[in-house]
Image 1: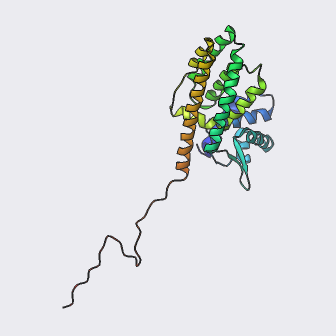
Image 2: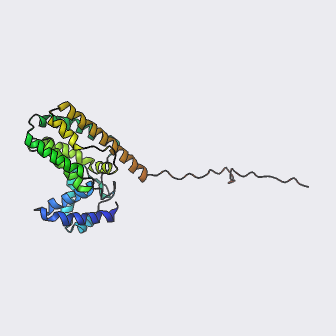
Image 3: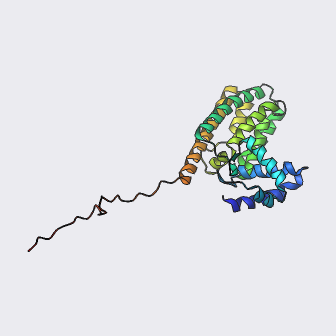
Length: 256
């Protein structure tokens, strides 16, 4: 999406989300975060504070504060003479993020399974079905967030879950694009059923395979974006010295 589509998305999000927040700052941050995760702006696109403020209907002060917070989330980068732009992680960044996620989430999963209850399993099944039903935009991201909060027992492990969520945010918009393109479909129900059997090794294997598929899909999306942003220049036939075309031969008629 370009700037016009992005500003329309901001207006829609602000209209829908404003009543649910007590402070303007929290609302602006949530609107910008959801717009970025939903792919409303292109990687590397400049985020002009005045344009964002006009679209959301606020002053520039909460917009700048939100952009600084989004920078710490890894969704926005501040560049000299350009200001805030949409972050675009490198392939090395993506590989590192998913390796860290594999380690942290495997630990979080086993820690949570050690104190699993039937009530939590019932809630996990409901959230798994809800997450699998979402395929686009902010609802997809939010449903996944609720599922993993419950899966990793976020109320008991807030610091651990915060680290996982920070890593997830760094590639959130690319994960969304991967899902929308239909690569490597999976269901969260498979993971929940392994948890219900107290099969920690099986649950970790499902989780790891899922993370590896998503990582590969995100890397593919990055390659696609890079090729689209930097197409190969067209080739032109090389003329020999003197400007003559190589497919024409000069002939000299004999003098009579």
